[in-house]
Image: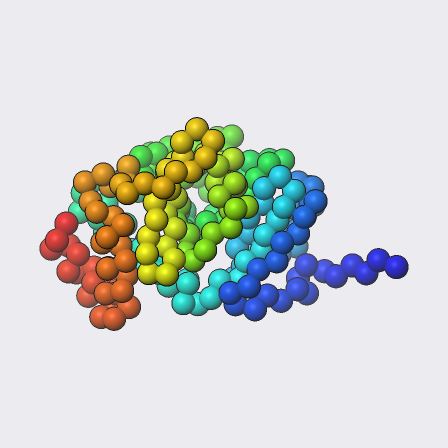
Length: 209
């Protein structure tokens, strides 16, 4: 006898995740609808494999601080941006992903008026940020979506990955901020925000950039 458990009944402990294999795109769409939008989990789907992750609170805070740092630097530089947070991005039948947070910068003008993301209409985000360890499923999904730059913050260090052809290569330089030592300043500023407060850190940042 097969026992079916509603997806809403599965409770993930913070910091844990589950993987579901051999899942069709239609089943993935159905699970997304069942999970709903008001949840604390993140999803990544790539060619039949779905991962559902429940982040720890201590992993949630860094990516929000990094988002504040990014927007502060962009405002100082006089550049436009749009923050799309953990919007669900889909490439039907292939991939789906919910970033910890993501930004349109170079293509900010192309998402004006966007209320429902459709990658047949809008480009993928220019920059996505993930906190803690990112699975192969997540990076495969980003590759399929064509996100040009992904930052992964883990263990108080930042790694920058640039999409080259069909894979991500680690880079010491961010194409979005080529004149800034991003891998050095982001961990320093995140820790400063934790120790001294985010608003105080941002006020000091404005005097340095």
